[in-house]
Amino acid sequence: MPRICLFPGTFDPVTLGHVDIINRALPLFDKIIVGIGLNAAKAPMFTPEQRLEWIREIYKDEERVEGAMYEGLTIDYCQKIGANFILRGIRYVSDFEYEKTIADANRTLDKTIETIFLTGEPKYTSVASTIVRDIIRNGGNAAPFLPEVVSNSLSK
Image 1 (cartoon, rainbow, N blue to C red):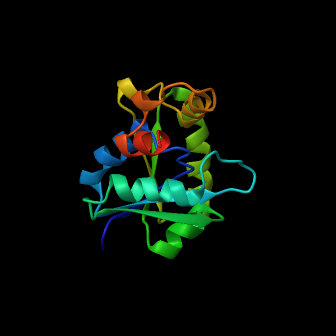
Image 2: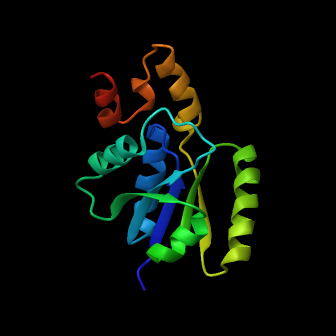
Image 3: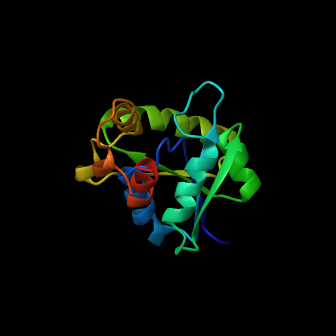
């Protein structure tokens, strides 16, 4: 059975922290699906199509990574795509507390899907999409926090 993993998030925008987690997870899985969750309660800065395009461009040479969009429960989407694992990145202890609560709920809904936590590289600890959006919104240079593909598309 292939080890298929869903890395869910908003990726608004895709940051170097996201890329770090994906790249370090690649040896663990046969396929990683970067799932852009569509959440009506959130007002993203970038369209889901733009975020998906960035993921596809960043990983155009890596056939084991693909981007997708989904709505509804993450666990339902895992079942739909045959993912046995959910990948989550952890920067701080507070991230773990929040993510563990979600992982516990997901385990209650489907015991066959395991959540895997990877801690981010220390150099990416301060890289959060919220902060990056604030920098962009206020005309600052967000390039140090972004993959080149994302940074280049923003400068156009």
